[in-house]
Image (cartoon, rainbow over all chains, first blue to last red; front, side, top):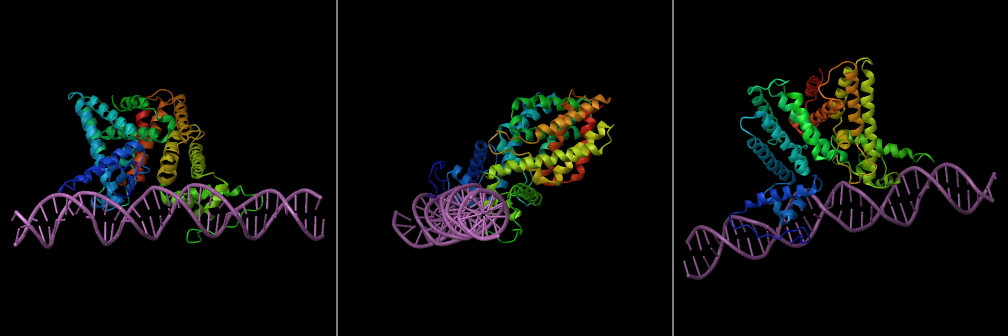
Length: 205
Length: 205
DNA sequence: TGTACATCAGTGAACGCGCGTTCACTGATGTAC
DNA sequence: TGTACATCAGTGAACGCGCGTTCACTGATGTAC
């Protein structure tokens, strides 16, 4: 073993024909690592390999280089966040679109504050190549825009046209989260809920 | 010379008793480097030394280690941003507090979009030690809160109490800037002005 | 059934690189006597 | 005035480290005949 020290998990190799499983194992290990790191510094290819319990060279069977690994991780985290938002919407009453918007905003803030590393990976500048690679932004903003349009159809009066209210409210929550992460004195998750309520009060009625 | 290659500027050493000058030269070189890097990756102690035109070891005469250098750079950039905001306020008519608020918001966005690296350094998680080290946040938010309170005193009706309007408006602009930096499709500075106007329209009157 | 070969999942060791940091030093400029 | 010494600004070379990446390999499992 190249590195058998602490942190190197023991692992039984996948069976013949099941090598593709390792790809997901790597992404899940990287995701786990992000939770422990609370930031994305130190998220090296070698660290991911250690967390997965494999040799660094083995990563190259599934990702052509470090950038490809990070792109894969970005896509993985995009799916996770999209699921969180969809779950929040489904958990709110189906006939309460404002409640759904509120629930999704709170879910976003909770995800972002509880998972600093994941949030960082989702919203950071990617490695050069714009090709075929895009963050979670388009899906998220359109989700919030749609939520606001449902509110408008249900009779709420919004103070911005079309989906703009949703965009503004999400962007503002994103800004609050960014400050939560960047400033030690702002790292208090209980301040996020009232902030979100303020935002909603600005935009609706 | 340890590294005489390209990037190493020629430099005449400071005169006897003027060694303190180098401290500022280092910070200014680091700041210049941030402009070229448009991000804070690659902002190593050695890269700063190269940009300053000195040997890496010489940095240690003014900063005890890399973290101290970064703290010094943070303070340096805080002063720059504070000056930008103050200049914007002074450039607006003294009897137009709403114009001052608007000017400061636009100035913030312009600084942040034109200086990605500087913005990143200002709003990122610092090196562990919270002691004696704080970002520009407190000064900025209180500046915007004060701007909003001036508006209220001048007769404008704000839809949030006290300085909250200023805080919300700044946080939302910060969120918009963060997306500008994180998402290639959002890197269009001309979209920031209408966004700021939307924010102001939400909060005032 | 046996056996030669192909394919698979993954490894171990090495490479060159830039990094942060240390340490003894160099040469110029000041000061004490 | 000269001279020994102290202080100053800054250097050069080396250290150990973790990194991304490459390459020939190993051992197990499948397949063709």
